[in-house]
Length: 93
Image (cartoon, rainbow, N blue to C red; front, side, top):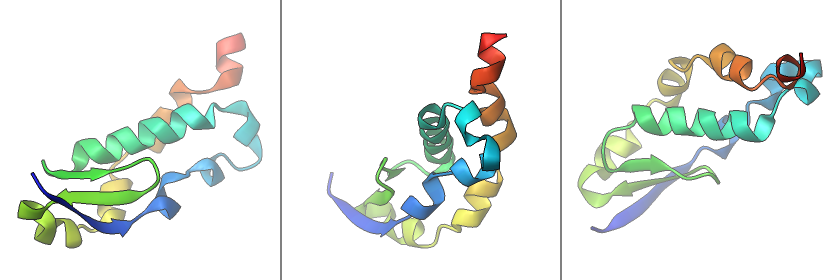
């Protein structure tokens, strides 16, 4: 199957700002990886976001991939839940 590069959403993948001053309390590598996984789970078959933010699509669904409203996808993800699972301080108690 042939694929094509659609766009890059790297600026949406690093959610460390969400932790604010408490960023050191969290495993941000795991958080960002889980966040990326959640994004990919919400995408139609044939569209994927790579770790570097590149959105790659099968040619057959490239039109759909170009129309994705990324705010809608990312706003559906429960970021609080991801942070809770990766709280370094909670693991040491």
